[in-house]
Amino acid sequence: MAGDPQMRASDADRDRAAALLREHHAAGRLTAEEFQERMDQAMEARTLGQLDALMTDLPAIDLNRLPGESVARGRPGPPMWTAGGGGPASRRPGPGAPAVVAVAGVIVAAYLVLGLVAGIWWIPWWLLVFIIPMVLRRRRR
Image (cartoon, rainbow, N blue to C red):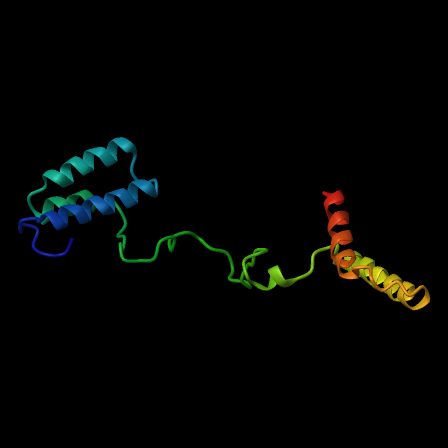
């Protein structure tokens, strides 16, 4: 805490010290007993010097930094996208896509041949194109 060590501490100063102690405890720098002892002392502190004494053996922490900033990160790389997340990976065809396209193509070709040769145009081919690949996909699961 900056300022004159003899200056009286406010409730805000004690709350800030408590927040710092919580961060240090969460980071593993303080045991549960040390944390509780220092919290009690912070709540009873009357001067800024007493609050400063609680932090002398701990590194400085900026409470305004972004959460997780202290977590070590690897080399930055391309963004990770999850399926269905709206990123590029969600638009890529799955591993069975070529088989589905092939089956749909065979169905459409059979429909056209039957329509030209036998005159059967009433078959709802669009149902076959979508239903058969869906049935095949469910059987694989």
